[in-house]
Image (tube, rainbow, N blue to C red):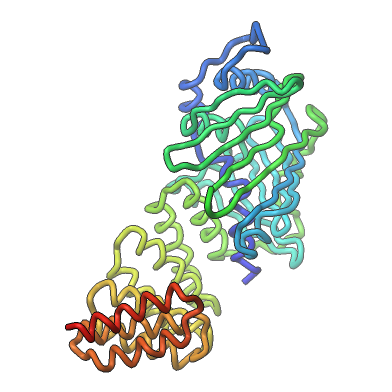
Length: 389
């Protein structure tokens, strides 16, 4: 698989900017012909000015620079860096990332992998019953409208630009920098508080310069991949950013079905199961994990499948099978970084089955392997509970 975890996260750098219906959402904003006073305006008027000024742009090239602060290294590596966006009115887009080149000719969506000259194409017919519209692959207008709906922005005049800052109901902070002449979005910052912060800047180039239609179609020499699961995985991860977990699960199910005979089938099954768990469809998730155990290669990947299977079996109260799955994980990777957690849940499972001494033995091993005092204190309390019964 073409480093799919990294590429999935890369896709998030533009997925946030699409998926909303512009014509429907635009009704929630005013759209003045001209702003009479650009020195005393609110966020809605600023965004309306952005829409008005950019409406006449036929072609546009945008250099997008993204950096991530405080995120795990895998997330940071995936999101940070530059991408080049080329747009042609009304519905063509091309996005060059560190991984694939992603494009839309207005009807079809395609992913081109320069390293091996291969291309995935999802046709309009294939996308018809999904939440994705290729015409909205990269649309700053729809992104700004969605932010306006979620955040109550305060405006600070910074001279040549405005700063819009706000917070949503989930406590996430957003900051926009908007230039005055011309009115353009310069930067976007999303602060996830305790976890991480994403900062993206936009540099506009060559507005209304000719862009040939061939830019928005796959290279003619590319090998077209048929029935490839990867683009469906990418769409699932993208839809997830819009909190549409039901749709993400459906798309990931499609990916897992296409991947059934590939060497990465277990990875797709794990992804499918994770979405099903988020929807509290635990029995279906359990079946996916069981399939992943059967097809995963020996070692860390099979251990991961056993681990997640054991966790969902524990959640369902199937403690005996959970114990078997946990031991399966330990047999594959006895020194795994999460082995202490497996021993803790082995202890919980044996306790539920009325085997307190075996449970205590597992808790002791968990304490020996636990990475911090916080975990060790919690597990010691489990032993004390057994002794006090």
